[in-house]
Image (cartoon, rainbow, N blue to C red; front, side):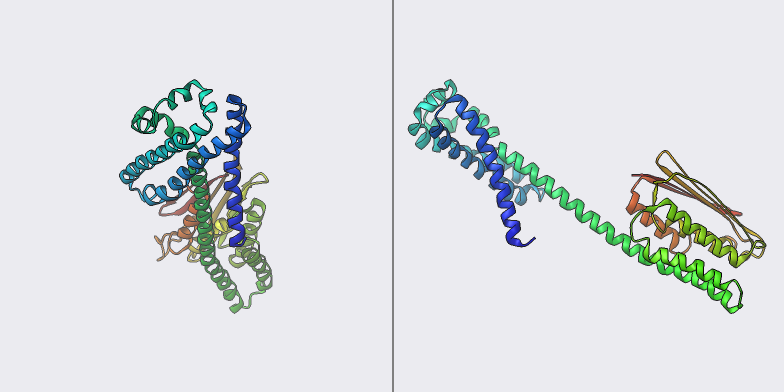
Length: 355
């Protein structure tokens, strides 16, 4: 949308806003005094005063003082401006509206009482001033609320865009880390001229296809997340064999749940990297995934190698930190990540609340 279109759209919105108020005033005025010409002119004058009051308050005083937290200055300027607007209303009534449409003002007991007093005496009447201010600034209150609502929408949009940028940065950080480790696994088998290399390439191809092309969304179907976990496990089983590795994957979930695309695979990769790579005996990894009451529960436990690498935490590197940052952006406080790091095993429990 071009600048001229934006200006035209805002002008139309403001015009409709004031026409709505004017139509309401005409209806109320005709109910009191059925003279269309008098009511139309009187309330266009009053509406003009209200418009001046509203635009100066909302687009000048509030940005200059209230938005900058200059509260005392704003309070003083607000009092000064409301009194100036009240003065404008009193003078316009006393000088033009009341002499021109005396029958209209004489038709109401309240108005009749007011016109008995001079303009100067009205300006000194604090009660009359306090009585007039709420009516004078009713449109300004509506305009202020609308402006506040639109500002909040803009802030939310900026926050969402910022979150999207941060997530893209985190994904770009995660993907090379994942690619490096999986390609390194394949490189090791290729050096050994292992006959399983073609099968590993096929599995790795599926994983890379997922990481590069099917995980651009912030959330994916739970079936897709499970499939990539199964492919990764199959790839690692081919690499290590049953003598060095025992993997169990328990899954009990319902369709329709959504998960961040690379969170679970990173946790699994972390378990292999720190629980199996340096293990000279038989390592184990136990994985469990289940859903219940709009909650996704994922746990993964890996044995810790009893070697010179013993004591090296799975939290080293960018994996866990990256996951935590992504979860913070996507879920806020609607997730729970707990880590149990002991001498024999490393356990991660992740609970995600659907939102």
